[in-house]
Length: 224
Image (cartoon, rainbow, N blue to C red):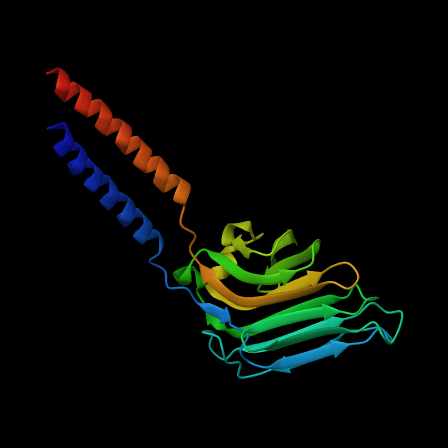
């Protein structure tokens, strides 16, 4: 009898967890940029000011009427202090010459959209990065994620609630990435999208509570 109860309650527990996990993933992710649209800008350190390049009618995005601007500014010291931003073939590459600790920004402008219907966080896939490279995300030119530090090659996740004004995601019209780093810093990125992180620890906590409840109930039945 105890084995029958165990199978019954385990099935219920697994069903509950599956429903909880599926409910977390109901929002359809939106691709901000998969970096398939080719674009390049480079800046040299022989003069002050940034070099920019804007691409209209951007492809590789789910955003409507999107444009993308690359803004690169190398350290001003020498013509050889080159900084370059390149996209294409599903990669975004940012590189600095040996003497440049330059800044790089990528700005997207698009028709207003409610990003809350597509998730509750921004995901940037990082393929390669130098340590101590900083990134800031800015929504609608006003709401900042604050400066985050890349410590390893991994998916970089920022919740909407981490921004100074999460309300802007209900009517988002621009998004920006600002990168800074030490001399000769480089980075490679693969995808910028929305996501809805699943609280796995909470799911396991739910399972543990249910199992404890089952054990207590089973013991009561065995003593009757």
